[in-house]
Image (cartoon, rainbow, N blue to C red; front, side):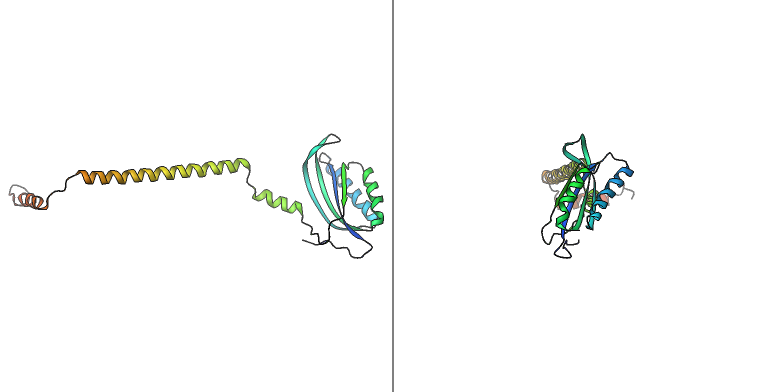
Length: 187
């Protein structure tokens, strides 16, 4: 991520946000952005970075538009020409709003578009999150039920063993010998 620093004392770095309608055709969009870049080039500005944010919803309607596309520019230019550029941006067709800001020293450009694309790939929608939480809750319920059933089965086995009286060893041996000595059995 590049740090914004001016190349000399005669120029400063400016962050320029440009908002235009999202309903523009591709040709109109390219023409509008080219006009903005040409305007700064004519003012002697040097383009350092450009970050297109794509379509975003607006907090309030601007000239009847509820959505717009944002483009962030980072220009290095002479501060004396700033007012001239600001006034020229106001009359470019299809520009809904613009904002020119001087970023603080040591400001690093973070490309929002790249960060947003990464977020889109890794995000979990609310519906997916609810489904995952339901699945986890169901798995916990199944595991708890299995533990209860295993505990009941163990307790039942203990009860059965305790209820049955142990057979005396001598009596068992005597019965086995009777069976073995019985001649009538054909084994």
